[in-house]
Image 1: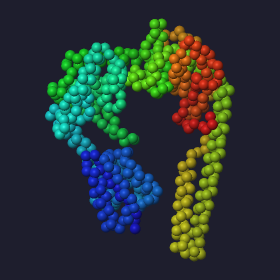
Image 2 (image 1 turned 90 degrees about the vertical axis):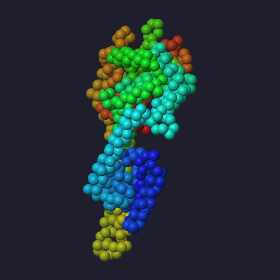
Image 3 (image 1 turned 90 degrees about the horizontal axis):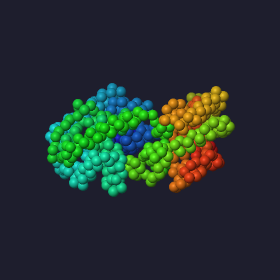
Image 4 (image 1 turned 120 degrees about the vertical axis):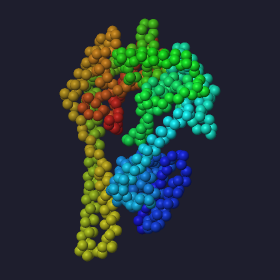
Length: 560
């Protein structure tokens, strides 16, 4: 009998859990009528047919299909597999390639024409359903009800969909935020206060400045939520599904497409406070935009906290005008234990001195390339030996298969006796060929061309030359920042106990040296001791300051 697998799916949590049970029962009855032997059942509950992502049952079915676990897939209808034209056609193409039929109880055996028609109809029905849902939500807003989504300060009235009521405890928090903001407190300070007091945020585990700040373009965030002044705003964004990931992403709609409804019974902020907050917000946005256009510091955007991994940002300037920095997570939410405030010029000096000392030594570059090539040659030898062994095994299996076929042709052995052995040999050959296809090409070695090394050294020399003017420069414009950022990916600052300074880890972009992907992991370290907050020259190649080649483009080489 033909081996068959059953697949069932329903779309949302609002549907009956027994929906898949009913589909499976229907498919089993179909299998009995058509002489199919059901060997497996796969299902996805509360999973949309708009994408194949997130459907574990379907992915397991496709993996079993590649393992030749069945010969046919039975579904109630083709839209159970997918309601997307591209996805349904792709599933049909892949299953057909594996010699597996798709049989639908209501549609029959799927072919290219049926898949095209059902894929089009399924997608049109899905999109039409989405339009009807939006139309219904627009009607809900016109009735003065909320169209969905969590609104901090409110909760849904049980048994009355779309109707909201005020949550007293949360409303007090909202009023406190608006009052403090209009009095001059920043969202970062407010988020820190709320986290320290253990007040639950709208979502997640902690308040952030972005929770309060929001986004003016999308109308999101506490400071932009017009529900607090008795006004429902709907259709601010539209949701779209990324075809490459299956995840829903939002896109802001033009303001002329927003739909508004006055609901004065939900007002919790007076007009004066609201307008003052919006005016202050607009002014701060304008100032922030001007600040963003100013020249950046040398390490702007590169600094990372060694405790939590967040960025380090400017905290203030001391009496002498020196810039000080701290972990942004402490500023934004108070969630990081790293409370150290560090001087940016000291970090810059430590980084630049270390880069200049370490990166310009040709012996280190040559030693690394030599070791790197040794590893690559070893990997190439192993890969070649593995490929040769598999090719020999494939040829041996195919030779035995051909000899068996010749014996059948010459009537030396009966066809029935040889059929099973020929099939086994074919399967073995296909498995070996699959292993061969999965092998990567042997890695090649890297030549240390004088021109590429020269180009790299020139970059470091340009950096060294610019260092002379760095201390007295008004900002970091010019060749210093450009040359430095050509070498550095990130700078992680690891704080030590008070009066013991800090350690710095630099991840560098050394790809220019070899004209290809970045080096695998390589470390060069020097120790810097703290004396009264001032840092003296390198002592040993031990620990502390580290220059680390960036990973990501090639796997780390073992032993380096």
